[in-house]
Length: 506
Image 1 (cartoon, rainbow, N blue to C red):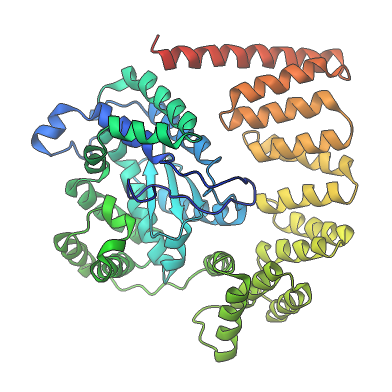
Image 2 (cartoon, rainbow, N blue to C red; image 1 turned 180 degrees about the horizontal axis):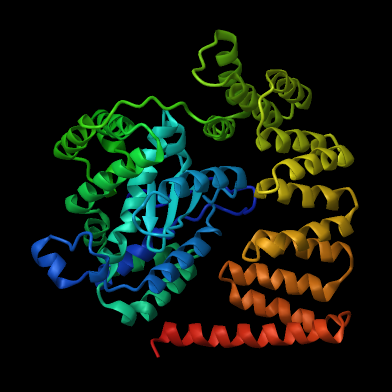
């Protein structure tokens, strides 16, 4: 089924956080496809020219855009292609928000995540949610090239292009969009239902509506180049990367990159990009170590484990790498770890230490190796040091909590979750880890309460209510804790009723 609607997440291997069989249906792409088919305004169809640049003319409110983005993101979290790698996602978010900070739209924040998919693609949905395929990250030959695609996608967000494509009917469309999300989620376990929806929505017309217009693309190019330049990246990278994509599409017509199918790339567009670049000074920008490490980590997961080992060891032997050798040793260590050769993985990690390279990714890898060798105390020691040095790194926090639980230190793990949630109250994984710490301590009410918060933050309101109902029956909480559970349960039930009304359009 992959390929019916180009430019949206395909199916991939189960992630480390989510497992299950590969669904044979049209995933989340169907949601926006159907939304587009139901609500493209007649004036846009009539003249083919959208309203550009003036946010005031967009009929979809920022609150509705945000809600759509949250719904799509919550649904994608349960997609088999969801990578769920906090280090990769953290890097993408740093890169994306560095670009977004130079936008003229004040206080713009974007939420980026990676999908395990070998195709060259990225996509944005209303609300500043941007998905990036791992294939695109690996295809980028420089950090500036990756930044050029993200800058282009961020420009679609700032100009509200997706919102304009989806609807000019304003708040009246909330119920329809919410109902579509529910329908898509229900269809995930029923391929026939998904195909029926695709037929009803007239798939060919939907595809045409999904594709950005040339006007939108030119505007995203112009603003994207400006973001690149302001952010300190090489603006020529956009032209070089797009030219390579176009060449790839000409050579392999049946496998044209999905990015070109939803972002029509014409000779005129490339010429326009080239003309704009000519007036800008040449800027050579070195890739960050983090970019190289993220690509090495993803490359280590490609193909078989032995293929990955051969790839990195050959680079080191022949000295054919262009970047930091520490990134190549890191990729090799990750490959050996995947192959189960822990001694060789440790040796590669020692080579990194001798190079005196520094990154939190080295420390989480070292701790992972300790854990694989059943050295829980060693893993905790490494991660404690990492936590002091890199307290802002979510992957370090999560790994430390898990390591403390494995080492039989739930009280210390609980303290870290409590401190962490002070500043990251909306982190669903942190709440879920806190639930594990309470479970290890035998505190059932608090376990279910924490898990309820994790579910609610990822859009699973019914499951959250179920957890709070279990918390009510736990019988091991204080009067104050019980009152908190009762109040939260009442709030969640009211919220669920609100959502039901929206879905029914009442």
